[in-house]
Image (tube, rainbow, N blue to C red; front, side, top):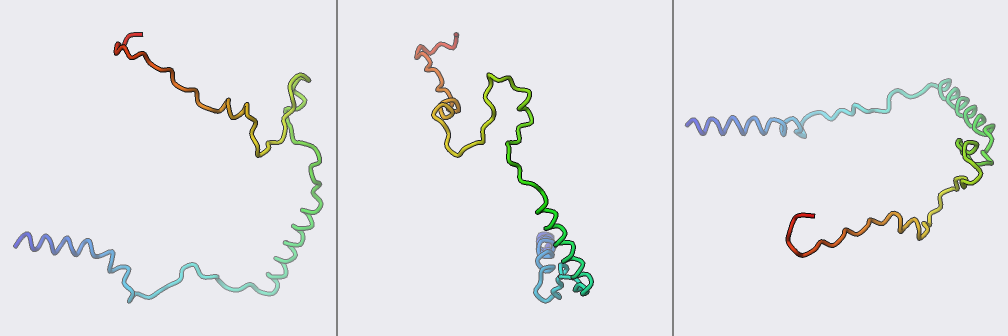
Length: 111
């Protein structure tokens, strides 16, 4: 009898979250769109957006490269170049992992 009571209590405890998701509960949208904007708010938002776009048009495009360390380097060092999608064979070889050295088959653990 104790086992039956314990199993009923466990079933009730484990099924409680499922009843919380029951389809009979009211469906409330907590992320609604909110109240609509008044015509004055809409017009103000348009003005702000127009001012923002006009400000973006006044920003000049950067013609040169952005190299903050350019004046620190000596003339013998190459200046940084824009990265390209293709890698050179040297870069491929440099990034490859070195192969481990083969061990002697003598079975001893001393070096």
